[in-house]
Image (cartoon, rainbow, N blue to C red; front, side, top):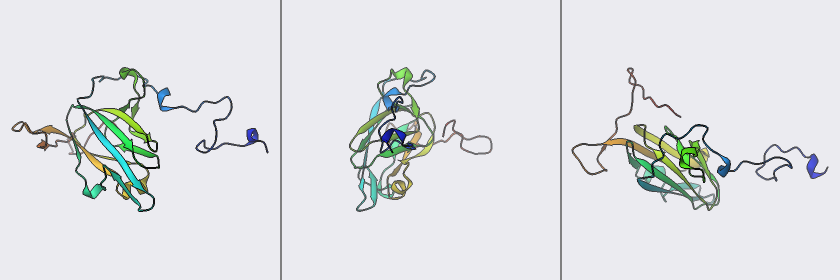
Length: 186
């Protein structure tokens, strides 16, 4: 059979069929204008590492049980810089809040994502408004990578009013009248 007769169920190992376009991250934009278009106050670099020989996957060179969580002040605008030092793609997922993908769109049109695919050897950046108090998982969505260590916590907290040190944070999750954590997203 000729190549044009073949049914393509996935394009990972095939070229895009004639007449169709495979969307790229640069094609995505928000359906509604972003509410927060502030420049980031700081950047958190998240280096993704590991290999299939050792079956250990890491964030910033450490497995989940060995790492310090990322700490963010409530309301802070930050850039998350995902740097993939491995030879596999990693779909990095953040619980509790959406990230805005920096994909060349105007800041008011950047798409909301809770998972971004970071290709091997590449860097992907997102902006995050820390608007949901609590401890949130950030991990590779390939579950065997997560269970082998590619996971961390992102803590969004109010800074203790008696301290100017951002290490002294007091997490205060939003809860409803039944004590259940509330968040508007994922």
